Image 1: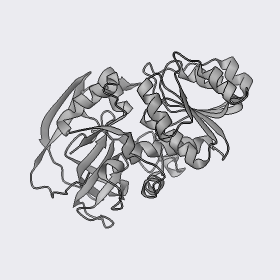
Image 2: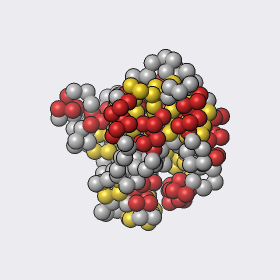
Image 3: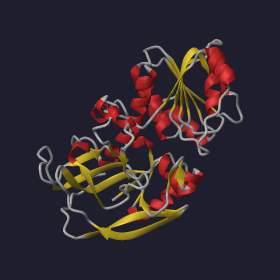
Length: 355
């Protein structure tokens, strides 16, 4: 969808605030002026993420709690509207994808090249930092990546979850010919599966309890997708791999049983990459199985340095992001989108808020 850039001509905007569990309100608030090295952005498209659903339905993710009204949303594209002092590489009217993480740039982790692990990171839509379910937002200029004309605003918003998938695959050190299982056929799981195929996975199995998502997964990228509740994916995958198990399992479901199932599916000496967010903030698996198998287990913390690669993968047609979008809603429909995703209604895969 083509969006039109409109230079800001007013002093207030609308934003969708989360006040508490399942309490979303559209309200007015001031538009801020960009400071040095900042830009004012007119939001174009925002993807609704699983983390937004956690805050909406549970009021928290671990120790990050919604204690006061907050604007959620962090997967976004936007038009550059105003430039702060010192911004030279951007121009008003440009469509950009925006990295929602603002690391401190000074700590040990930032200096080591791991800004995603910065303990002082400010992340859009994570309490107490406001996100971008709003008409405008301020961001550092360095977080903005100019999009080529061939990439739409909706695709620009989904570069963030694609970046998470790229980071997860990077952590796995997947090699051409490796076999892979991805648990969870939501957007992150689907994109992990797609990136794994691009990198050279010979077989990608997926699991998901919802029939419509299993069907979508097999049409989108999976070789086979199993029902983890009514089937036995361990047995199915064990049979398909001649008793070996897959080289890598990416857990992207966030289910209470998923980590245990991952350790059961993966081969001896294999890797388990934990990406999903468990609702109860606990990871449980049999230590004896993981130890006996000599597993490498890694947890994914968002992403790092992935936007240029994400843009190229979409620009060159390697990754189809638009097929993931099943629902498009206006800013007033944030609550509706969150309800769809909370209850998996109407065949939803990915919902996008379009301004």
